[in-house]
Image (tube, helix red, strand yellow):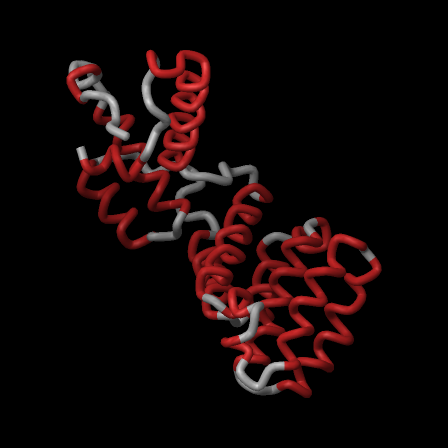
Length: 216
């Protein structure tokens, strides 16, 4: 489905300062601190008060989670954002599960079982975690867990998702936006266009497609 004709909006003027703020928001959100510093220096923008606050620590936490070193990510998170994981049990479970999976991938099955019994089993008292626990524990039954039906739990995409959730939670704990301005703009455009499409049907604009928009 084709996107809107660019001629419908190319006359709309966008302030350069707004564009720069959007770019800066994306860089800060994703902890690209060196790039963000270069961007600020090149554009002459004022450095926001909360610009460098805890960014290096947040970057380290994100990297450790992404690499599967969840225990280190948990340790640093508890230092940076006390009580965050205590209050967010879902995130805490996901991080502990990353460590369990890392042990499985390292073929340390005995250690993985002991870790599950001490750290993961207590979550089984809450119904919503039971099925998740069963999926993780089932990995122990396979000599090659990468080929099991639960292979997605070992994937980089799964670690990326947990790391992203952790990053957003830390930002929220610091009363900062959970999503960058760029992400929120795309989310808003998607919802608005979907509503217009549903309300106006074939007479309205098609649903928003970022991939289609970037091709124009």
